[in-house]
Length: 106
Image (cartoon, one colour):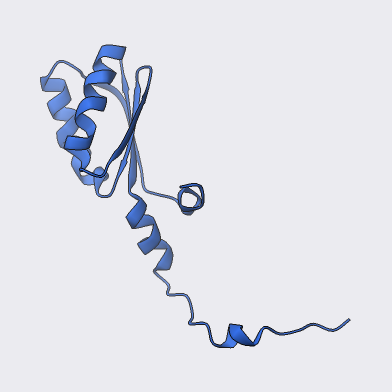
């Protein structure tokens, strides 16, 4: 059995060590907020793009709001405080950085 070598492989630039980090940073942090009532979740979903960034993607399912935005991890604490002040306290919060699988699925 003979193997053939791809001559173009020698011409391709090497992958930078920080390529994964740069790719993931463009996708944004995933913020998941849980609420005690659906009305609180509706309020949070309405304000999430304003609070987490104008390019945030926001979805609400029942009492859970998920938002993804670049830099959301740095802004979520202030947003949670605003929600509490508005009478919509957050019962559960999860913040996760983007994963490479998000890039493949996104």
